[in-house]
Length: 83
Image 1 (tube, helix red, strand yellow):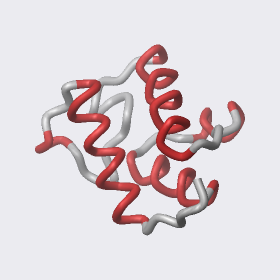
Image 2 (cartoon, rainbow, N blue to C red):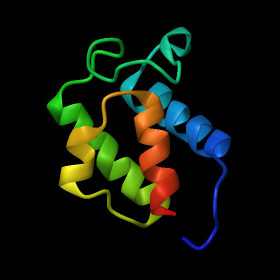
Image 3 (tube, rainbow, N blue to C red):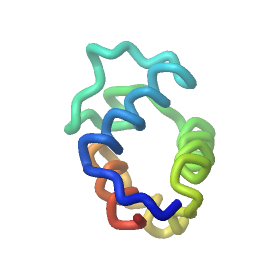
Image 4 (cartoon, helix red, strand yellow):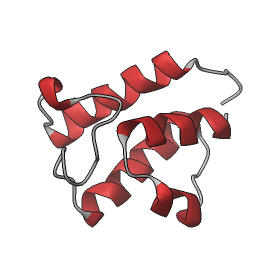
C-alpha cells in the first residue's frame, strides 16, 4: 500500500475492524482503551487483529512490536509508523 494514511484515518479503520469483526461496543472505543482489559480481547483476538491490519496495510507488524501494543493508540502508532 503506497498511500500514507493520517492517524485519524487509521484510528477510524481500526475502530471499524474492532466493531465489525470483534463486536466491540463503540462506546468502549477510545484511543487510551487497553485492548485486553478494556476491550476484552484475548491472545487469539490479538492475532486475528494483526492479520486484519496486515490486510489493511499490506505490511506486517513484527511480533516484537506487536507484543508492545497495549492500547488502541499503540495500534494506530504502529500502523502509522509502518506506512
